[in-house]
Image (tube, rainbow over all chains, first blue to last red; front, top):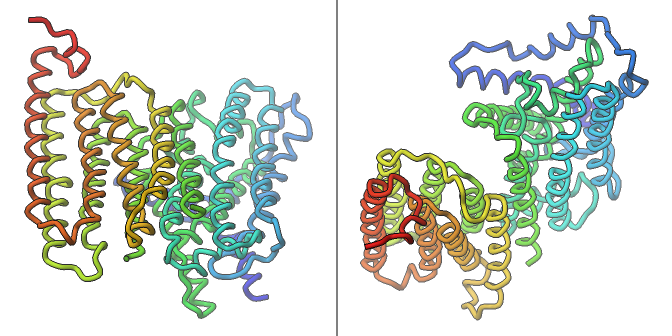
Length: 302
Length: 213
């Protein structure tokens, strides 16, 4: 009960902090002072108090999409175990639900972008969907590797497989899956090698361009949902990167939070040392992610 | 057998694909030197107790493949002032897929080989075969002389991994002889690259086929 409570609190409260840590890391690399670590919380409060401007051409989808996306990603967060603890919701085959909760969020975000009738937003939606076609197989291959390793189709057992199996024998596959999942994390959250969250140049935007017409609380919901997505996918990656367990409950939660911040710093470092890829080179990166995860599977079953 | 060994070899395989997918020559040089450093760690992991010969092999490899050769190549790059491989015969994405296919083939092929039983579990044989294939792909599909050197280096890395199977049996002198050959070869090629650049004001090796007199 206590663990479920902590799970919910972390899932709902911690995500904006991760983005703050990423931005602080980038600022340190650039020699700037950077925004405060809690900046996104301030932004969310500010946006919640603002009014909304809604275009006359839009329908209910435009208003509904941010809410559905947020609910979808929070539900996905319920399915993912944090650290060595079990997820609040777990049943056989929930990995499929997890993948499609991510997909439904994407579907409604792109639908809302098309709903505005703006050419730019349509372009962003097309790009988002194109790249999603390549990131989804990578996710499924990664989950397949873990399912094969654990012999279970429950996300809670499956993600704990690296912990149970240890580094014996499966280390090679896990390294490959970890690389693939990290690329996936960057691509799904529109971080730098794929997309630049700070850019406002319409021709190169992917995710940012789809939410140009949203304002006020709706934009707040989108930003909050995006940060939760980062949190959830990082939690999945953590199981593969750091399969450790201390045994004591408070220590494990502390360890989990520290690991989470380490991943955020890692993302910040990648963003600082890399330039974003040219749009036509992004598929190479995603195909590489698929190949890594697929090889992980080949190594495991051979 | 150290469980880290397979993880290390898998990273080597991942770097292979990365080399095939990037067009920046400086990145290729950095990645290949990183691969060299990783290969230098293998001798320390492969035997149960680490002897002097393993340490020498490791230090020698890291120094040469990780520092000296990249330094020479960087100098050559600076002298000829090129940054990118512009028009490979096979594009970057197809060559990456080809590399992946070669790796899959190597995994299957290594199973069919009649290896000694202690050589079947680690990925040494498939990793070496796949690295050799990737080296071939780089050598044959890239047209700039300097990227072809990188292909040669990757090829040599593959042979080096295969040589790791025999680390305990062959004398250290042979190992160092191979490294010395590699050093001399790269040295000569770097000089050649400079001459090609002076003669044709380009590093495109296709010019060499059109030589007259």
